[in-house]
Image (tube, rainbow, N blue to C red; front, side, top):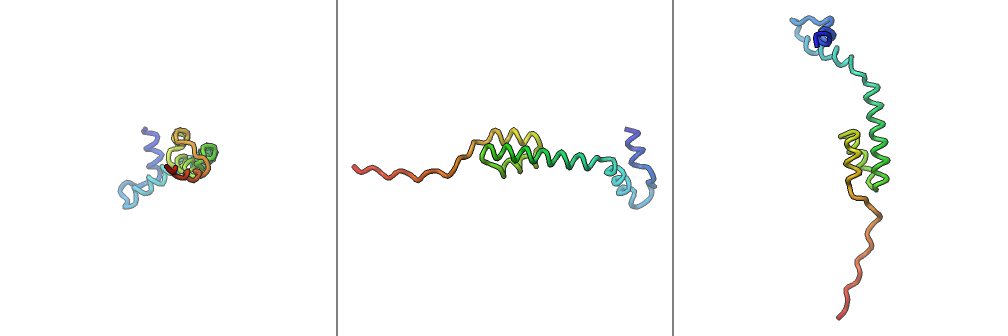
Length: 94
């Protein structure tokens, strides 16, 4: 933890008015943004494929965006949609 704090506070004057934002910027520079973005794209693509298989592509994309791979399970638990329902049968005459 001390190592992380040292990296966050590198080049930051704690007495300066913008010290928080400088430390925050240093921490955000440590995050592997490219890998996070690529994983998110992968999760959404798989979620869309699962959603399409279940007849709910939009739900697959939304759940994968919100929950990642856990969203895949949500999509798999959704009922399978088929085409539009046929019109109702006419009433029987007595």
